[in-house]
Length: 278
Image 1: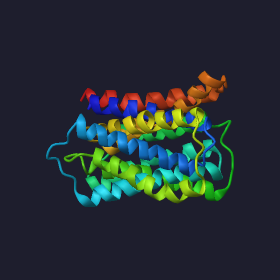
Image 2: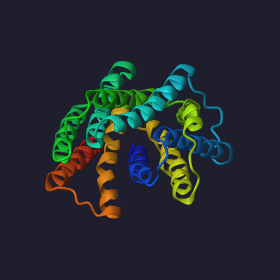
Image 3: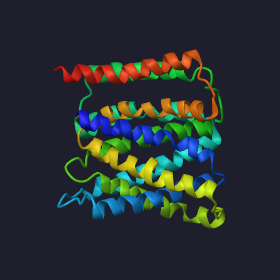
Image 4: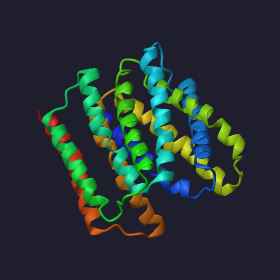
């Protein structure tokens, strides 16, 4: 279990760096999403072919295709929501995902969340309230609704990935990036990206490291821990976004943000420690 949690934790760290690098680019967000996924798909295919061969592991076609499309729509809805409402609104609403993962995992996978998980979920939302108290604002209801949808999709994706624990969940991630690229092709044609060092280097980093390696880590983790455990561990991602901003730009988080971040970290760590002692 520790290896699975560690993989998802590292995955969340890589995911969290996307915002900073996207700010370095002036491409259309749908183009960024599509080309990032193209590079990620090529990277994951290379890893699958030459390094970690999957052997005879087979995935059920239903969860495989459903998971691929759900994760693709998760990425797109996240980008669209960021265009329609504030980043704070999006990140808070999308990280309703642990609740959806807990409920769907209970219904679909019969993985009933323990009391520690429910306490952790309550603490996570309390921590987010403090963390984003100064930045959370009322914005376009459409953007907020899409952000909630993104959270639902994210939670559902973790359940669909967990359904493939006896197969190779990485195939689902690889397929999702292929689907994302195909959907983005019209936007790439309409908004052709300008290729220069300030855009190529970030997109290559995001494709290989930020989303490619992260996808492999997430796939590894979901074979070893439950969907709700994965979602609780992944909530470290939105906390790290302002950390990168502080380190690069010098923007300091508020006291309430620090307190909220501490509560969330405790909410992630304590349930896992309690479960290990059983």
